[in-house]
Image 1 (spheres, rainbow, N blue to C red):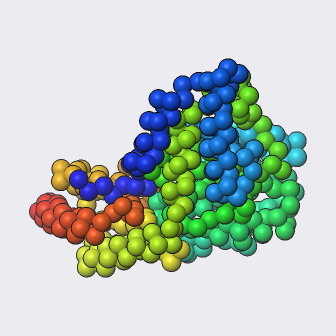
Image 2 (cartoon, rainbow, N blue to C red; image 1 turned 60 degrees about the horizontal axis):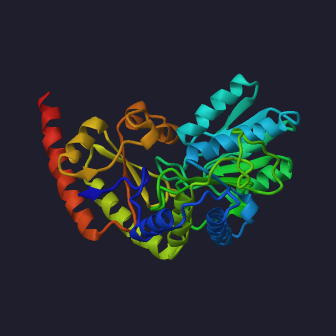
Image 3 (tube, rainbow, N blue to C red; image 1 turned 90 degrees about the horizontal axis):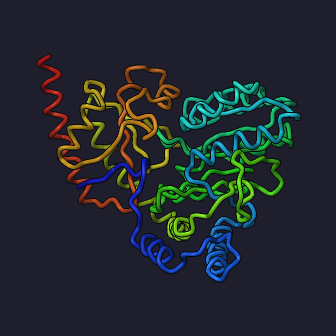
Amino acid sequence: MIYLDYSATTPVSLEVQDTINKVTREFIGNANSINGLGIKSKNLLNSATKQIAEEFNILESEITYTSSATESNNLALIGVSIANFKRGKHIIVSKLEHPSIYSICSYLETMGFEISYVNTDEDGLIDFEHLKKLIREDTILVSICAVNSELGIRQPLKMIRQTIKKINPNIYFHSDMTQAIGKIAISLHDVDLATISSHKIYGPKGIAMLYCNSTVKIKPIIYGSGKSNDLNPGTPALPLIAGFSKAIRLALTDLEKKEKYINLLNERLCLHFKSYPDILINKTKYSIPHILNISIMNIKPETFIHALDSDEVYISTNTACSSGELSSGAMVIYNDVKRASHTIRISLSSMTTSEEIDKFIKIFDKNYKSLNSLVKKD
């Protein structure tokens, strides 16, 4: 098997799996309970949270655990909107967001909020002049992802924050960092709120977090009991949280070394794809190497992906949550419907070996020639 769909999800690392198993067996108490087992679990919860806070140089109280990045995005956008609607109902987002952001924005529009979409330049970076024009006195929130999930375009969060705060210091800045954490060096202090997911960094599925700066005015969107989490009440998923904490520590180790290695793999694949006249490489100078997006112009992407499946090679079209749809990222950059409807995303990892790339190229070539011959016959 050759797995090249790491941007959709990652396998759980053995170290993380060991942590989850140990906590599941040895910490059976509810962390909200006041008995001995509950206190034991609560202490572990506090320890895991403290470790995450130290890794990101934030306060423990600024961490809210959720079940997914989608839930974190909902809490960030809806929670801030509900808490600040008296101050304004205007929100700004980019055109390169995860589909969950747009679904949330559509919901907020039904509640009377106005959504503005900031343009990008030819390389996919936020158009700062357009952003400045969009910012108003009644703007309460800006949400721009750190790294686009389809083309891997990285945004300069610090510069965006400075631009926003200079015009209106009362605006909160949220970033979906799902595709950035564990791949590139990034600071949570460049934003007010950040979404981080476990299963993108070799941690378990079903656990994520929202970083929310202590100065942010936000309301919960779920209500219930449980003292451990005011913004997301209920019984803490302790084994998943402990695994998440371990995954974060591992993911943030040797980032620069991992990125350099992955860049070599990316360049090698790009060099190979350039030999095909009907394959276009969808990347800009701001795309991180972990995500390589191409358009096979003469073959339907789902046909090609299913062909690779038969050889146990696994890639995807665009994002896992919009598989089979037009690539919004490719449309924003290239404004070409055919190109955007023929995209394939290859996700690389520090776990990807050079031997796997060798095999992938051979299998790719075999399937391309086979499917291309059928296209020519038609």
